[in-house]
Image (cartoon, rainbow, N blue to C red; front, side, top):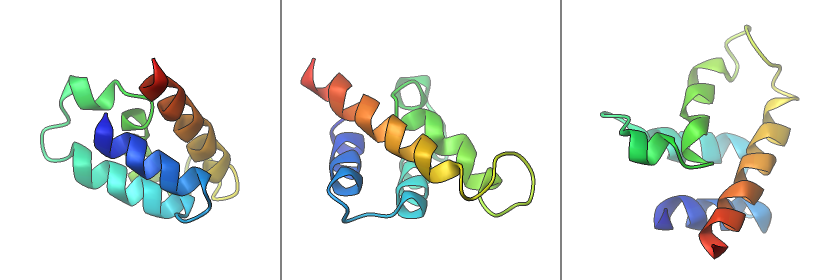
Length: 80
């Protein structure tokens, strides 16, 4: 929760790109993909690592919006 909230704050403040966020989420989640990690709002984004730039699924233009939404949800969850 702490690491993901820090990543979300960086993105929300404009200091981290959506692609960087996805990279960090994947690094934190792997290699075990623990449900306690992947159930967090930002943790759910680990699946986007394969999708980004792969030519299938959502476009590279759609993915940043998904990341912004997840970051906002992560920050909201951290306040609870």
